Length: 132
Image (tube, rainbow, N blue to C red; front, side, top):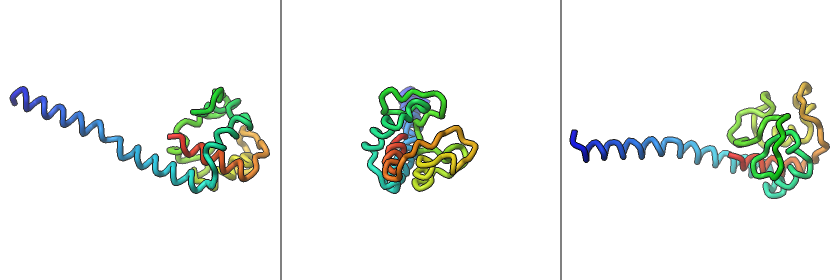
C-alpha cells in the first residue's frame, strides 16, 4: 500500500472513531432535555435553589459555586444515570419525590429530608437533568 493510500485510510479510520460517541451524546442530551421538561421546573431557578438548600454541603454539583461536598455522590452526568439513590428509576416524577422526601422513598438513605416543596423540587430536578 502506498504512503498516500495509507494516510487516507488512517485519516478515515480516525474520523470514524472520533464520531462514534456523538450519536450517544446527542441521545443523552435529548433524554436530559426531555426529562428536564417533564420535571416541570425551571433549571435556572433550580441552580439557585441547590445553593439555598445547601445541597453542595454533601454533593459536588457541576455549575454550582462551592458545591464540593463529599458525603453524598457527585451529581455530574446526572441526566445519564439509570438510578436515583442506587435503587429508584431515574424518572422526572421519581426524582421530584426523592428530592422532596428521600427517607420516604428509601428509608435507609443517609440523605435527609430538607422540607423541599414540590415547586422547588421540580426546579432542582430540571437543573439536575441538564447535567450530562
